[in-house]
Image (cartoon, rainbow, N blue to C red; front, side, top):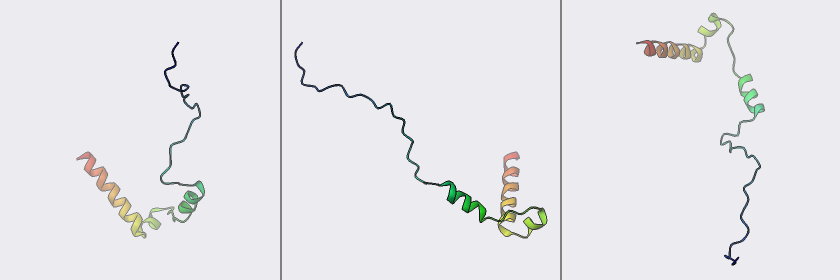
Length: 68
């Protein structure tokens, strides 16, 4: 058989690779972030915090918009 001038056929890797994580979250930093957020345990605590109040209003508005 004549030589065609090509080298050996390249083999595909069987090694699994993980996709690149552009955000590079670590469980340690995620836990630290969650630990720094105060989570109210009742409505009276929640109503005093503007960020939670805004979140509740936005959620109710979204629910209303979805059912309209």
